Length: 182
Ligand code: NI
Image (cartoon, rainbow, N blue to C red; front, side, top):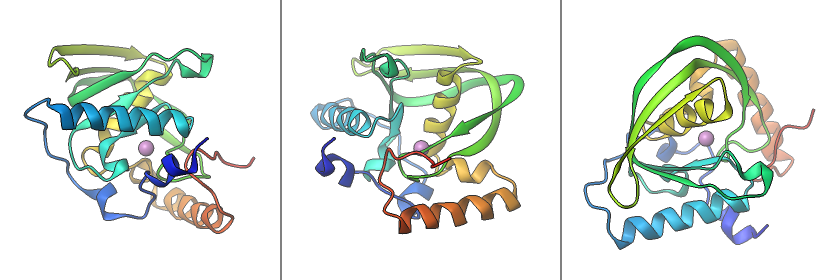
C-alpha cells in the first residue's frame, strides 16, 4: 500500500465532503485521468468505492468495485449517476468510508436501487442491485456527490457517538482504508 496514494484522499471533516458536485459535460482526457487516479486510490486503500470529492474534485463521478475482495478487478466508472429508484425494505449495514478512517457505522438504506450513469465512453448504463454490497455502495458513493456522508444518515445520538469514535481513531493514527477495531 503506497502512502502517497492515501495522502490523495480527503479526510473529514472537510468542506469538500459537504459540497454539491457539478455534472460532467464532456468526457475528456482530464476526466479519464481522474477516473484512473480514483481507481488507483480506491485499490490502494482496499475500498469498494470512491467519489470524486474524496480526492478533492467536485465533479459527479464515482468508481466502484465490489468484486475486488475476490482479488479480481471489476471496476465500474459512473459519470453523472442518478438514482432512478430506491425502494424495497430498508436494510441496516455496517458501512465504512475512506474519508472517515477507523470507524464503521450502521446505516439503514433501501435494499433495492436502480441507477443510471454514463460510462467513460459516454454510453448511458443502467445498474440494478438488490440486497447486496453493490446496492449499499451505489447509494453511499452517489450521496458523496451531493455533499452527504454516511454520518448524515445517523440519528443524532448515533452521530455523536460515531464522531467521538472517529476523533479517537484519528488520534490513534487511523488512515484511509483502516476499519474499526472491534
Ligand atoms: Ni464514503
